[in-house]
Image (cartoon, rainbow, N blue to C red; front, top):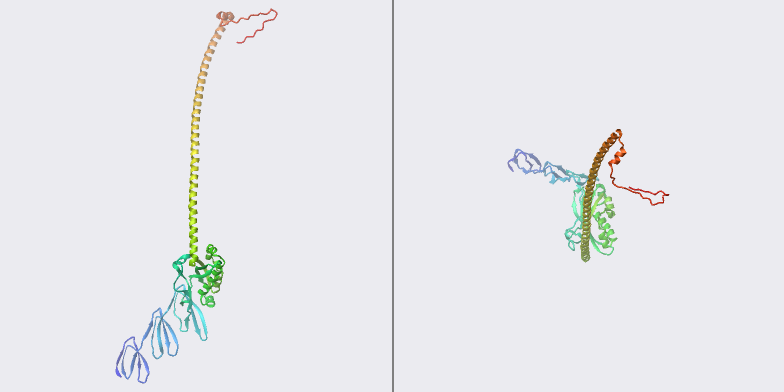
Length: 417
């Protein structure tokens, strides 16, 4: 074969001779081909979030982290594939195994990271119990069954490489649990758990969810079997207490987990038992409503009586206050009258005293003048006795004393003015 061949810049070709020898030619180049065959080579590229898996014809394998590109050499390479690097978030981790010679080592890679495994490394794939396809529960939403859905777990329903290392939770319903009086129940729970030790988890269990399920089943069976149906309903608040789940807590600790909380989400009973239970609830509710109605009527009657008593007491207090006020007003009027009378009497006495004093003063003045007159007359050698007798010739009254005795015994005379 004879001809010219132009190889563009950035391209590569492999030129085969008639003898089977091969030569790789880079462009840009213009070649004269004489009995030669040209095979264009393919360049495989990887972005920063990818890597190349290069398989050699001698069985070797090499991983090239992107960004990178490799020309496929048909002589050396068996295949070149582009794979996506594994993006690990900050709350995720990978379990990576590495084989060197005859030994295999295990390591845990935590995010955030864009992980590219080496050619001699592979990832651990987890296969855990997961949620089964949704099954409709019998009896609708009775006993707290949301939407009639029963949460069941089946083996190997969860297959994944990236393990979440943050606290997680799962729904689980414990089915066919019998009480002490042989009532068949379904108990609905929600478990909150957290991974605390990678190595212990990898060494002690291959399916932590299965361990949780078995342990919580055992705890619920022990709890329910120890109570009758009525006692179970009265003790359901204990199902929110971690102390009710000792086997679950012990198993979780043994496999590198910690149970943070268990939430009781209700129960579901058989149709017949649930109907009986609903009838009993309806009857109790009716009786309770009747009791509350009667209690409210009695309370209303007591309230009316209490209010009437309060009004009666207030009425008596008002009447007492009115009477006290009337008496007070009468007392004030009486006191005012007495005060006025006392004032009038004091004024009268004051007037009489003043009049008496004036009269006394006048009499004293007259007596003084008369005494001075008599003194003057005595000085003039006038016989005052005769003068006074002569002045009073006509007495006001005359008192005569007669004696009927014999003359020997003087008469007894008592004169009282």
